[in-house]
Image 1: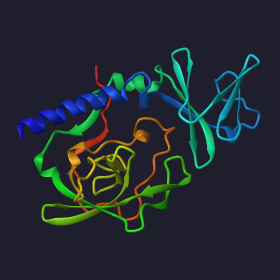
Image 2: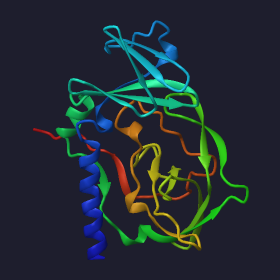
Image 3: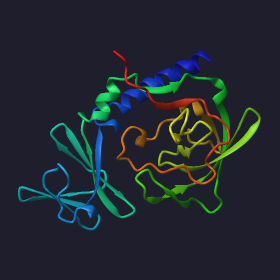
Length: 250
């Protein structure tokens, strides 16, 4: 218990440092889709931007630079990151001076429930027989996009069986977008969970103490998929990250 609690505390501290880093999620001030700017002029970003096949071309002072997905451009202290989603190209603007980051640094950070061993249980991953499948889900920006799901993760809490549809990441870890009985009241409206890669028999640990806020809890300009059908647990998950903490009082 002590080792697990200490490990959780370290995880929480590292997580807080990560989200509050100069170019972490709190610094995102805009996601600009190039299709919304046919003249190529993005808000408060110098140069002209256009799509060209599998890349974005930025023209600045007569010089063209071709940028692929995830390319980063320095703009003083700011960082511009090129993204692509379902064929649409955009530019994200990360600014260390973003008001959301400043407010976070002046607050108590992330409101998270201390480690409780009741929320760490064995789970079993069962891949879909036909491989991964795409499900259309609403995103935080109001658009629908495909969410690739690889299978189901089953686990038991207090004698009750639960199942979540999960994606599988490039490093083998699982990814669940879920809601529960606390969503929208005691916790943010939905959360993420990243169980470790399952073993050959599909076993992994479902540690809800490490449920995290999605990026859109930190900045409005993230896309964040909502939970797919069936991923709202009929119990109160009073564990993990819950909300952003309120500003400190003087």
